[in-house]
Length: 424
Image (cartoon, rainbow, N blue to C red):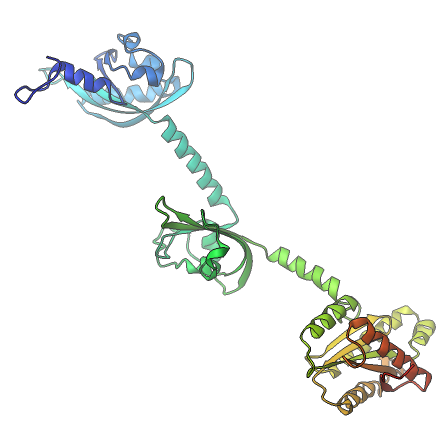
């Protein structure tokens, strides 16, 4: 019979059929390590048919570099009637490529209690080994990365931190339980996100974030957070990679400051002025207003002509410093260029308040400037325009304030005047 029924035990043919249909290589060798049996799967693994390997030594198919070590293991096991358990070695396929094998075998023992061969199972672990090697390569890269890399479970417990992340958070490098490390330390941005900010398929967030290091210092980072989902769409785990962008941010701050500030006086410049006026106008209504004071230093050209531009620059820095110390903290003072300054003032309810403010600015020049033990008397002229009475845009406001300021200069200097609609 080729099968079995309820009253019969399994036949030899049944077991042979069973062995031929398994995916592992089943074999038997004799005392000389020669194959005496092999199932047909060997052809898929090594490219040789079962008939071709019969009578041949197992070692003739093994990579040369592995033979000595494997012979020592096999001989020792044979002498002591021991099993061969989870032994890895490399065999050579018929076409020359390497095949990684894991073997498990049981000794065949005669009636004198001597091992006269082995019966075993070889498993092709080539794909598994290559995947493991790739995983190890990726892990080596992650471990060596200067970036902050971490994973967490669905309960918010950190499950992995690479060395850079451990250093950042002040956690020792010892392999300790990381569960007390709450993932919110590095997912603070993620938990604030709205659903529409995430990719529906992969739930990926990319952007800039702020992380706090072990010293309590806030560090700007460029970060990616991935919400890994299982096939049933539930969250499986979280991972992140974050890069310190402190240097870039510092550089951006320098560039921004250079674009918006005057390098000599460190006051906001013309570009910053226009941006500020635009913002003020956007939030103004009929009940709110602001004033623009156009300030020009009287006879400043004489300082440059008599003392040189070096002293002129020093004088401008001293003048800017005096004005910064005199204006209110929330008012906007900038250097328009040369010896011209602009002051934007909010919250003045009457012209009298503005006039008192202008008088205070004039008074800061009551004391001469001191440069190299020499004193230089300085005065200024101020023209004032008010939004929206004297203009509803930056250009008009500045032109009107400029005109009234030059009118002030022609009529005596060292004073102020508010623009009037009929003033030419």
